[in-house]
Length: 266
Image (cartoon, rainbow, N blue to C red; front, side):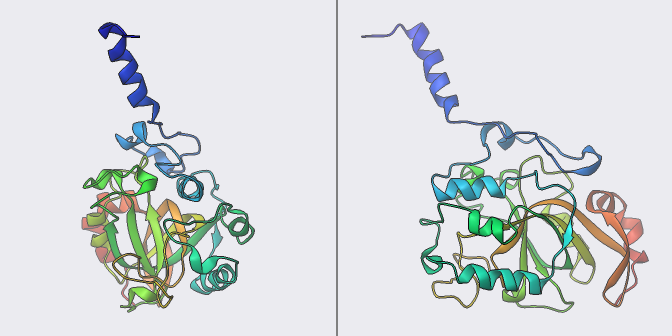
């Protein structure tokens, strides 16, 4: 049967849009309504372009609904949880092509809870710009459509990324001021407080494991991440590795030229 041209065009558009999903605005956690809608929010949903275990993990990566009752988490906590994951059946075989078909083991260890980590920025960059990621529908070469990967160190002076922990600012409704260039302005000696959801990244190997490659895997101590980041604060007054005054990152960006001198150095 030959369809009239007047019907074929709407059908083609409908078919093209069928694969697109908008990102839900439920539970957007950003304070003071600083979230901004980006093109990816209209075309890439919770599961991105993942299937099977990848789709399950993508949905967790995009979860903004863990709440804001943050529990403090330390590097030792993350190491302890990593050891428990490493003891799970099939752990050695997990990779980007073969991820767990259930998240129940991770949930039992704390995935989906709201956590808060205090440390120093070791490095930050837009992730996977060359090809994009499944979770972000494989949009390449676009900062606004990809995660900001942040390597966090618990101790001042840490140089080795294999001693770091990971946080990810996802692109969905990401505030305008949350950029790599602004994160770099904070430097490596100012404490930051990162709040968000705890999740386990089964897609990658960690430093020291068989199959680890710095070209294919982020260098870090544990595959437990704060992902997505819900809130990011910069220390305004710090002494001997502790902070007595925090400022939201978006506010810090607008006042950095006058406030950076107020922090006491360690």
